[in-house]
Length: 143
Image (cartoon, rainbow, N blue to C red):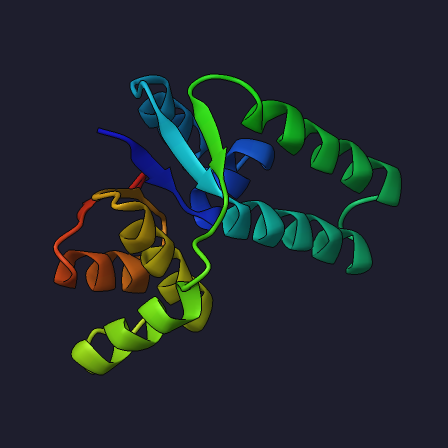
């Protein structure tokens, strides 16, 4: 059964953080790790945000974006398009679970999972993890 990798954990593969080794270990145990075009977009935006904030040189940002595309072309990663009804699914989740708060982008990741019929999530975001569990998803966290 495939594992969906959200942006919070995808970035840990690109930027060394305390949870990086754990994320990489969990990914290595999987046969299929799904990364959506939404997660790829968000990761590239975060890379460029670090460059815009002066935390990363522009050539390094470009190299990281290229590294990301290379990584997503390798096993066990599978880059998939976000479903067309993404926003509608997210809206229905919010209406059905008014107490299951998580920010919009995280909610969109959960809608991607629903649209792709995925049931397992790797995230470092606690609000997203709670919302995912409320939807009946299995959640792994690196921390």
